[in-house]
Length: 215
Image 1 (tube, rainbow, N blue to C red):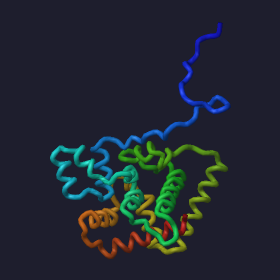
Image 2: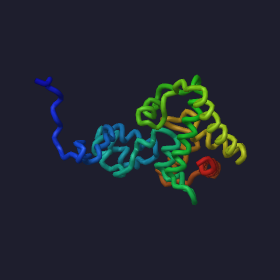
Image 3: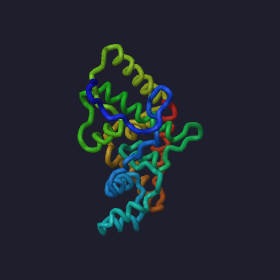
Image 4: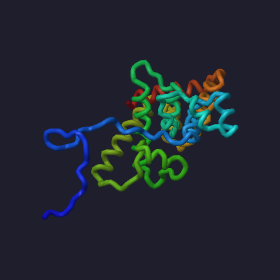
């Protein structure tokens, strides 16, 4: 007699006997407080929502957030810029610019692993798969990654110092919860309906230009 095995899972199967895929798994968006924190980092909390939150009515406050928006993108600066609609470009989709910025982040911190950030929302970035933990790689692979990083940095250098600094500030520097300050001011202006400063808008435009170059 054969040994008892794992109970056969119920469900429709393919001709080869594999279970047919069902509905896509539901993504856990987190608690109401977490969703509110993320939305605040993206500059999306209006005064009424913030007031409800302060009064301890987090569930009611979170219910007013825009549905279908992945506020988990607020885990880094380029993600907050993406959520705020600040990565608009006449050729490349905003998602492409966001991903280019995150790829630059990965390449940079794999190369400079000894200086990699720790703590804060870096753990959330790792958990969401936005970035990977620095690991030792074989020499050939390391050389390929370094070459990919250097190509991007050289392209940014060719655009000028201001553009490289804007991209570094948005995508490489350690701004996981808030920052850089110029982006925070842009998000605050968006939230309150105010007018963003010319210098801050110039930096955002420079960052968008640089990200388009390294896509």
